[in-house]
Amino acid sequence: MTSSEHRPGISGDPYHPGRWIALSVLVLAVLLVAVDATVLGLATPFLSEDLEPTATQLLWIGDVYSFVIAGLLVSMGSLGDRIGRKKLLLTGATAFGAVSVLNAYANSAEMMILARALLGVAGATLMPSTLALIRNLFHDPRERSFAIGIWGAMASAGAAVGPVIGGVLLEHFWWGSVFLINLPVMAVLVAVGIKMIPESKNPEPGPWDLPSVGLSLIGMFGVVYAIKDLAAHGASWAVALTAVGGALALVWFVRRQFRLPSPLLDMRLFHHRGFSGAVLADLLTILGLSGLVFFLSQFLQLVQGRSPLEAGLAELPAAIGAVTAGLLAGRAARRFSVRSVVAGGLGAIGVALAVVTVIHKETAYPLLGAVLLVVGVGAGFSFTVTADVILGSVPKEHAGSASAVSETAYELGAALGIAVLGSIVTTVYQGFATPRGVPAATSEAAHESLGGAVDSAEALPSEQADALIWAAQEAFVNGLRVAAAVGAVVLLATAVAAWFLLRGQKLEEGIVE
Image (tube, rainbow, N blue to C red; front, side):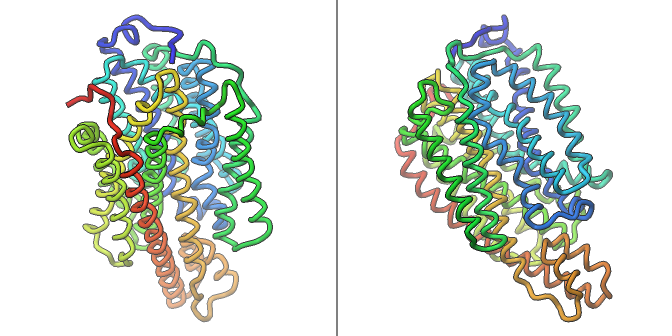
């Protein structure tokens, strides 16, 4: 990777203090994009009351943001190589702030889905540049490894911090406030970034292939939509055709990348066993973390009756665990081996998800807090080490592509955690039996979502309302247990796979002690 511009005293001098200020800006961007993936979790009950989305719409509101980011990261990473990563980062930050206002004042479920999708487009311009710019900022391998550790800690913690921030805001403001917090943060990012971040880009990047951009988007949306629709409405020819169409688009995308002289994504990177293993671990680490945090937010509020702030604070152990483990991950990987730390982190998340299969409505908080702490620690160790492995597995000139792949895995994992596990929860939830005497219209609204059940029960006599809410809560908890069981099996299997795929893998020399 070649820098087209070196700001004196920052990128040219590896020991100038300005590089740490620049790092803080990059970390701020990563943290905010990650926070926005889960901050909506606590606001879901309030949003459901105002916008009255269907169950399928509610899932789209929750995950379309992450899917758009995942679908565009590779394309935007390639664009940053061409126009400059700093320029793309600052442009994206400005757009992110502007579109946040549209999210905050959405007045229908359809408008909210569109606004979240546009926020994803803006978010996709932020993410690809961060790791590549870190590599350009930190020339010393010891400092660069520590900087990646900070980046990884913030990325892992972002999903867990979202509910805490959301809880504080929802105690005092309406649900749209969870988006307006983006404005001052992005203003600081742009103001500091203009002066402190050096520009870098590929001097000979080749053309930007628009057909590849379209194929990646069509493929990802087709496959994911099919997964969600299958869970919500069962098998049908429409679902089958959508899945096949999406899969074919992805296959076409891969084949096209092999033929292009300057591909959006160099598929040859995946020939490296360590690279492929790290990407897989990335994706499933975040799947377990984001899926658990999203649905526990609803469990803590709608089943256990906690306020938004209480629910957000209850999930704080996940953030604490992720940050702490992220900062210690490099040292642990150097001492115990990369595969031990990554496989151990994945295994820890799998065990924590297995514990969720035994929770019930009255489960005491110490158990839930311990589960969240273990998930955070596992994610912090695994995600941070794999980010370093991904960058170290490829030549320096391919660092931009490697960064985009790492962040695509992160966003895809966050979206799949909500979509796949959410579809399981929804399928089990919708099977509960309506108590006798409940009107058909009320029953239909209650079966859309747990929030819908709580809202619709307000119009019923107290005895019927209590029976309806009890049945809906039991169904939701049952769905959460089943989803957790599936997640546990997937994570534990991935831990075993990572043990073999990362055999002999080492971090770059010079990791900070």
